[in-house]
Length: 212
Image 1 (cartoon, rainbow, N blue to C red):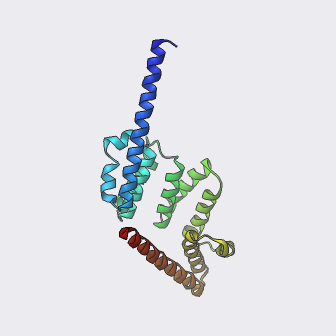
Image 2 (image 1 turned 90 degrees about the horizontal axis):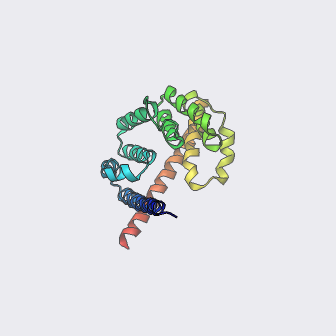
Image 3 (image 1 turned 180 degrees about the vertical axis):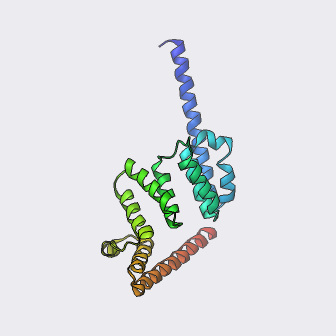
């Protein structure tokens, strides 16, 4: 091995090590800010030079999007999605995770055309459960469908606790679409009870953690 080759190898190894350390530092800081619910500070942090250098563009965008939504700044979240997914020179327009987040954002806001675009792009690049779930959500929320009621009722007994709220919500919406308001109220009440239980459980866990 020549001296030049050895020098290049050592430089490359050094750069790789520095990038690894930098990335771990950034990830650790982001995790800590999320744990402390410091989302306003997190928004500022993800635009700092060190984060731009050691954190991917897609990860920065997703972190900003989540922070904006948690802070209730939906107009800014919408502007971020518009520039990221529909901008002329955007490099992230085909990012699957971002497309999924954007799809649910637009579907929840009733923006059918943009939700369709996200779903179409996602479907052209991926297949499987994620796309299937998005398609069902699109039909229920934006097309008034109730055809998935039986399927979701069958899923309820074996659903994990974290999946129950979504099933309750979609069942309530489908029964509402079908004009069965009593059943819609039933699953809406189950959803509210599940949310209250989850809130109490999280509160107790936080209290115990604080006392340690």
